Image (cartoon, rainbow, N blue to C red; front, side):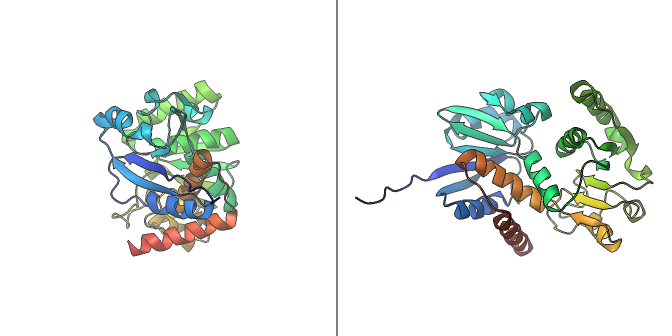
Length: 284
């Protein structure tokens, strides 16, 4: 009697726009290492079309990832969400099992594993740049870790920053300082960039000046394209520890695979996928 053929699984990333996503490449490399037979596609859906897309396509998959602008809007469509996803109000991974959908947040898992691998610590003084979706997660995880947090924003983000401060006070009994991006003038144990400043194609820009960066000890930039942003260059030039967002991206994808397929990956396997992803980006 022959070995039964394994059924191909189907996964996807839903968001808009998705033109330069490297998620299919990362998941292909992870699934190959786990022996998973699957395909991973990109599904573009406008904000107004999310429910129709969910009903007709997404709910029929084995699982899917969620990115901008749907990480919050997807929640009412799901049967349940994890505690972390509920806390953040953000879902980036959905498991579909036995006709039921469960939303999870593996951005936080990827972030924490990436920091741990680079021996970067959240328990000291932390400066978080920006107050968008990913910075919101950085704020929560830093608060949970007991960091002394400062949030740096543009003038236009001040009201949103104040709203986030009230939210964290309510949910975690945690407070943090708020300052302007152009007023950062002291050092921190860790700078975390959650803004898109420096992302391709505007690679010459940085959310902070070099003078502001050199006062600190370490930098984590959530941007992965380019792998070496201007902010990272400032960190290198001043002998700070640094890490770009590619490791977080790969680790969050690995965490999604763990949820979907009950897989496990070694640190060596993840390091290899990070290396291959960096080469892939250079050749894009």
